[in-house]
Image (cartoon, rainbow, N blue to C red; front, top):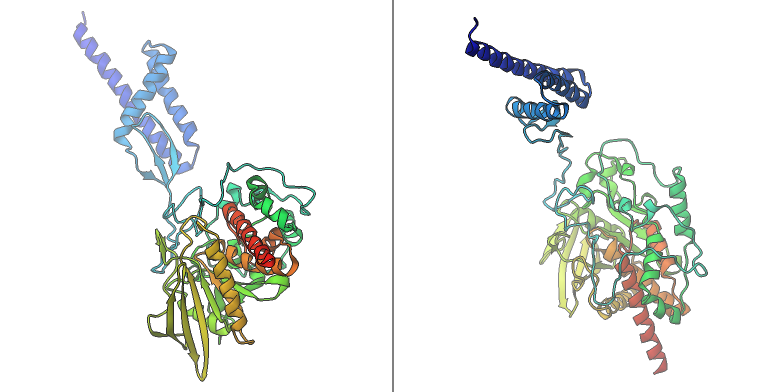
Length: 493
């Protein structure tokens, strides 16, 4: 008569052997999946089914067998195949949850500059979240009572523009998700290339958009948050596709990878080798002034340590009489390199000497002499420091006073002088507000009306993203409303 304990031992040994047999099948099944690139999900189902059959044969119920099969595989593979990348996949076992995730790779496309120059995406930030381009992601200001970000219809009777796709609106997540630029491809498409229907619609909007405001309408409009939001979000930003600048090494010349100069209006630096694109490139655009004046302004990024020389080349080449700087050197992160000297320095053959420094309440004024060869010029730099990071100014009068001071200085400049250079960090937000305010003040004095939408559209045709946030758009209205009241008060006196 066979011994019962011997029979029980053989049974247990049989069960243990079956466990290891199915474990072996499980491991081999996954190796087979890796080598043949079959679906991992189907492999798991096949292996789990085998264990399920095993537990059913043991006498367990169907649901109980499934639970036990998953537990056994999860337990064993937690030791056999710990969580680590295999063939580029991350297989997570021993956690009760099976998943595969593509292992992220750092492509190493980083700035070589000492300057901190993050890329910007809302879905996957690669550096500091707070450094959204000078894009001031959630600006706040006591000047306006900003409500929720609702989309309302504009005044159909006064707007002469057509709706555009959601991707072109500043308020959409799509337009905020700025992709990485990968250098080293073919020549850019250039201005005049064939546009998609969406791009054509955006260009048509920017060329035709207009909303003329009388003084009474301006005062009312400045306080109408919802109407301004609707108008702002309907206006295309006109950002440049990074694919238009696929040149090796160009990444070192841009403070932000996705804020690039529109091709048709970009400033081209003179170079001995005109075929060397990098030697002619600077992240800057010519902008029209009041009445369509060509090249009245240059909007550019805050220089980086890699582009200080290029910046001074542009200043000399364009015969610039005035620089307006609207950013601090650091605002949580570096926003602009200190491109001027304490005393004297030479960049690209141009000798820059500080003559005088004057400190006003809201800005400082530096007067330079520039000398190249036998020619000598005078340059003024207005450094506006009362525009806080990620906000609009607390008060409108200081900005308005600076605009008027710059206009007076331009009138005193030699007739041969070139464009005024305006920059913040990215060269689109605060820069756009200043230039728009300057143009619209002239329009209000000359015509008695303003067309803020038309001016915004024109600026964005020349450099994408000008006047970057809805709060900034409202602030421009507020400043113009204040200026009109000043003009009316002066006229009455």
